[in-house]
Length: 407
Image 1 (cartoon, rainbow, N blue to C red):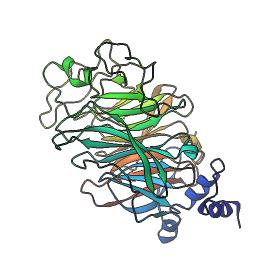
Image 2: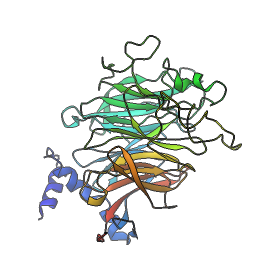
Image 3: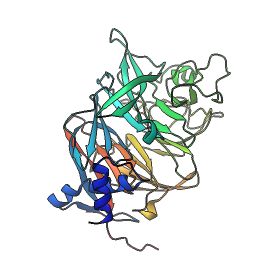
Image 4: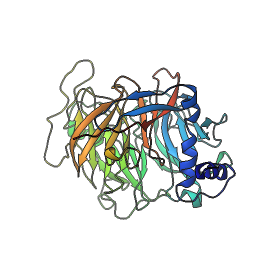
């Protein structure tokens, strides 16, 4: 029996993970059935040709993917289900103990991430849309709980955004831990209209959480060194503001920089490098226009005291999910930013030189409505495919075929 077969058997038997060995072995089995059942499609790209392999099928509106040290994959379904994929199979029963979500419009169960020290504490974090007592309003909230025996225990709400609204969209809700163990959360502007005095828009007002990035300790406490802790009238959880609806977020594995992609209106999706205390300008500056009418929204594309995007998309691609590749299966893509496109139905590969964008390649054009993108611990790139009407969709992954030498 090969080393991989032995380690897969040990992981299934419940052995303690040793580094990434179990994760690699178990993830290596994901999609194996699909490989045997049908020949996967092969796509050409500038640096790596790749095939798209189905990992698991039958999910409804999968929103986020996360990987556990034992090789399990967690997937959230927007309706409110947390699913486990084990040995390439979707377990029939959802994880019990997930909080009630408001699955209306863009809302529901959204992001999932494990604690950086998950092996010791078993904590996972979930973001979701939460309604008030009479169901008339809703906001973004985050809980954590211990994943044990197929259920969540010790579930505790650690964040409730002061972003209550009657609208059913722009929740943000992406989660990410930095290398120091701080938890970052995106909160959307809750569809507050970009009209009137733009400088008074809620996303420009530090007294609420609309259109912000949040930074917390892993238990929900506010760090003493957050930028607005001592500012009168400002909420201390805020790390950055002036956002519209960031639905992709990741830390660069080498530099530690925080990157987000953000939905613009009709035009003007953005890729932003997030800085402490910075104002990203929505809706005062930007590159989009009003839906349907095409009327002007912004005062311009730049203004003193507001940060412009590092990269933007006109027309919009409906950015969602963001990964910075750090695996070994696609060596020429290492350090590239991958962002999904919902309306664009594509995968954008953005090349960085430090903190500057120097190139972009569109992959999988018109193939998938992409909700999430993750760089897996096995070196493959995983994609959660969404269907606007809620029809069953798969998780797929990109695997390399023979590399071509490029000049």
